[in-house]
Image 1 (tube, rainbow, N blue to C red):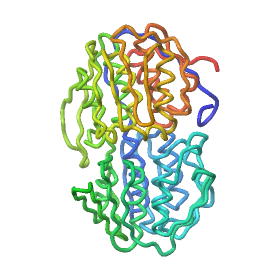
Image 2 (image 1 turned 30 degrees about the horizontal axis):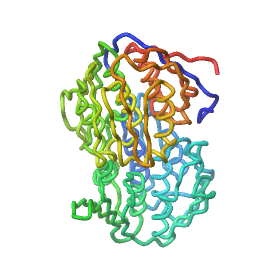
Image 3 (image 1 turned 90 degrees about the vertical axis):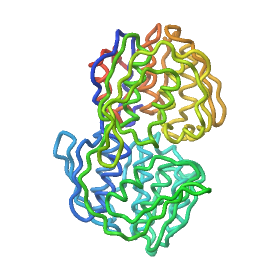
Image 4 (image 1 turned 60 degrees about the vertical axis):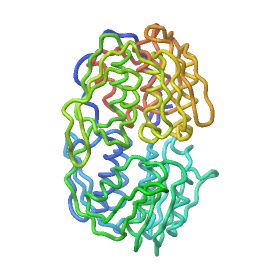
Length: 450
């Protein structure tokens, strides 16, 4: 079933050229953080371009539960009147984060050093995902947690009444874990230090600095050392959310594989910790260009133009690039299906514990549609069939995962036979306008009876 209702089966058919302007939604990562940091500030934070997908709406509801005033004004404009660092009230109800791993892990960090007790839950997908990767470092501050076997939701956290600052080395690349520890460090006295061997998306560091926190980042022989001085008074901000590069990946990749396509995706955030997919696609021979490069709100932004690319070549994606494109590997595997040769993806074990086991979900679905896939614990290889040679025709399971659903719908736009998805309902969590946006570009996506 869909995360928020009955299954919504969809089918995607081969289409003519995709063309036009794809105004994708606001960045999900920045949207979550805007609401949370706004709630931890004193005064009113104004946000424009907020992603109004279900994941972010669940975070907005959670911030209201902690005592912040969160108001929607229409057209992506929101305000948050915060309660300040350490000012979270104990919620009256369970905090339901729906499908959002980012939301629940960041919120856990934000409340972990306040003397309140909070119970978290989510949908079937989120309740199956491991939380120990966050609750273990939060325990170093003095936070207690009790959940289901394997550290899974539903879970109750008891915030530390007398938190202590910590020094924590992130064991695997994870912006969620890093961010949870930094948010917890806000209400701990002294300096909290996070060390990551491999750089992950740095929106939290950038935005903490923007809200007035004392934070520094140093590149050392052991990795990035992030030092945060606790108990600041965060100052409210005016935030213009750039468009989400992870959402842009879908119209961009579709344009590369559908003959004759020419699609412009304006205002995309190109933070170097997020833009690995576009670098990879260009290395494969994609006709993908950056136009009108600029900076907005401290983040690099550009307009992306993607054109049909019939001569794509398989490549080996550098493992160290994984953190900058971890959410985009499913749709990259779709593009790889239309390339010549093997596309090798290593160092991607994080994909096994996303909304679904994304390696397995894509491997099973691609094989059913006539594509050869090999896989291991932290790697997979897609052997491309070249343009015009991907069979299609199968029904693919989304596993309550929005990115899996959208990836297979992109696949069907260029296969010989339609591709069906058993439940595309979860797409609403991150890209609620996916259907009409793709239809406006010329895609043929239809809903069918379940």
